[in-house]
Each structure stands twice: as C-alpha cells, then as structure tokens.
Amino acid sequence: MFSGGSYDEVARWLKNFLTSHAKREHPRAEVVLDDDDALEGRAYRARIQLGGRTSEPIELDYKDVADHRGALAWCAALAQRTRAQVKSLLGAGSAGDARAR
Image (cartoon, rainbow, N blue to C red; front, side):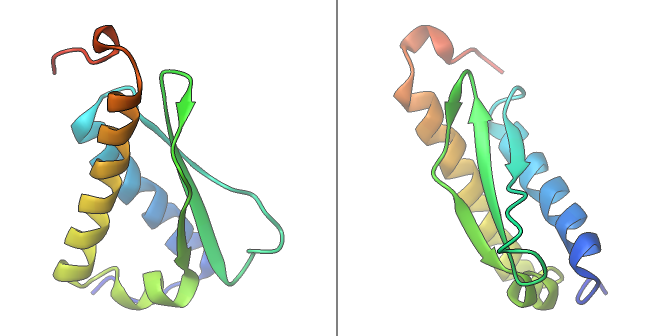
C-alpha cells in the first residue's frame, strides 16, 4: 500500500513518521532532515532537536525506506528507535527540562 515512491515523496513520509513518533515522547521535539547533496536520491539523515539539544543522526537508505514503509514490523522498529532518541535527549537535560505530558 505505502511502498515505493519518489525520493521526495518518501522523504515527506519519513519526516512525518519520525515527527509523529518523536512528539509522542515530547510535544516540542522536532525532526530535521539533512539537505546534504551527497545523500540526494540515495539516503536520508534525520536528527531530532529538543530544548537546544540535537540527537545523533538516524541514517536510512532511500530504497530501504521506500520498500518497507508499508511493513508493520519495520515501522515499529523505526518508531521505537525514534522514541529512544527523544528519551535520550530528555535524559541529557536537567530534571526541569522534562515536563509532564
């Protein structure tokens, strides 16, 4: 149903997917996709920003995302990875940074 697509279409889906899961951990989490020309057409690099902190990059191959974005298990693993990045950012700050949802 959701597999395949152009590089830009898959990038939009990926950013929306990552943002959706990042915001489940903290509503102010933001996802930024790198605009690296060397990645264009072949891969994506995403980072999560929260409270002035930035996560380690999440690097994904374009074909892998395009082929698996309709696969529940693959999506669940990516969602878990994304949420772990946000939790890591929350843990890196002071206790006052983590606000109740």
